[in-house]
Length: 119
Image (cartoon, rainbow, N blue to C red; front, top):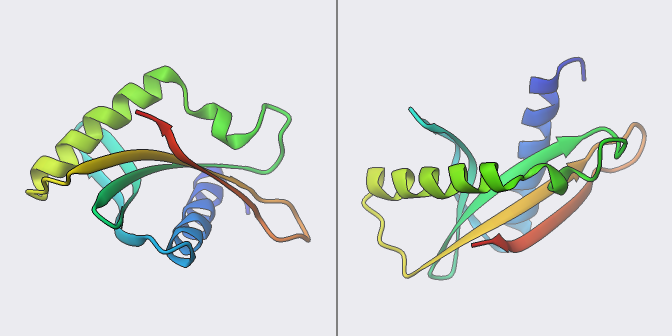
């Protein structure tokens, strides 16, 4: 992988497969509006799940899930409201998950899924 964009895209694909295998239905990927982008929107039962995906090659700057700062969490809450409005969804439950993907040469990717990482 030569660029950060390619790494991120690969991580999001790995995360989407992981979430699907875990029983979630992926509704949207890379949804954009004027305020930013949601990586993955999924459904699990009655809940709409907004997943932020962080991908890294190594942990020198911390584990990928550590990159979701309080400011990023605020932005994701705003984007979730925008997505719900745009899709006329009124889910009884909302959840914010973080999926960390560690991609290392020669070994399978390591996926960490934090359900309900923040509210």
